[in-house]
Length: 336
Image (cartoon, rainbow, N blue to C red; front, side, top):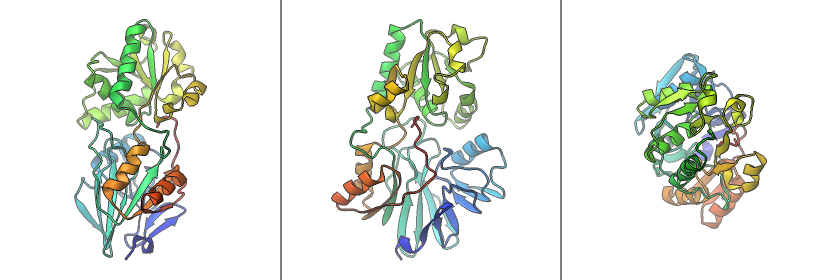
C-alpha cells in the first residue's frame, strides 16, 4: 500500500492514519513523534511524545518536566516500536544531539521522514544514516545551488585568526542556542582553543544539558555584569538576537560575528552588521541534499519546507518522482 494512502497532511501537520500519530506537529495533538528538539519541530502540550531519549531531555529542559500531558516514550536509535499496526524506528539525522529520522513501515511500504539533517561531521551528534525506503521526505532549507557550506574547520580558523589580530576586542558570536552553540564550542576545542568560553544566560542550561549527556564542552562561564568589561580577547556566544542589543553593549569593543548558513549571502551579513561572517549550518547544503537523494535511493521524494520548488525541479531532472508538501510552521531562522 503506497504511503499516500495512509499519510495525510492536516492543519496540525503530517498525520499517520493507521498509527494515529503526527510527525513534528505544529499544534498540540494526542500522540506525536518528534524528530528533534528545535522549537519549530518540538512543541509542548502533546498527550504522548515519542522521541529519542536526548530529544526528550531537551524538551524537558526547554518546556518543563510536564511538557507531555500523559507520557514521554523514549525510543533509542534503530530500535523498533509498534504503534498500532505501524512499525516505527528512529535513525540518526546528524542535525543536533538526539536528532532522528523517523522510519514508518506499514502495508508493505516504507517511508522516512528525515526532519532537519546534515551530512557534514558534527562532534555533538551521530552522523546521518541513509535508510532504504519507498518515499523519502526531506527538508529543503538550503536547496539552491548558491548554498554550499565550506568545512567548518576553515570557518573556526577565521575566528581564531581574528582573535590573534584583535587581541583587545571581545569576539561575540551569534549562534542558535540549541545545537549550533555547542557545535561551535566543540569545534573550537578540536582546533586547540581551551580557554574559558563565555555564554549569554540563555545558553547556559542547554550547554549544561549537553555536558550531562556526554558532550564535553570544556570550561564555560556565564557573562555577568561583574565580568563583562573584562572580556576583551575572549570568545562570547550569544543568541543572534542579542548580537546588537542592550546586553551586548557592555562588552569591550565586540567584533560582531554570526555563525549561519545564510552568511553565504554577503548582502545578508552586511545588512545584519556582521563583521565576521562564519558559514556554519546544521542543515544540508545544496550538494548534500542531492547526494542524499542518491544515497537513500527512494524512487519518490516529498519535500516539507524551504526552497521546495528548486529541489523538486532538480530531483525530477535526476529521475525521482518529487512533490512539495508546502508545510507551514517550520521557520526560516537567520541562525540556521
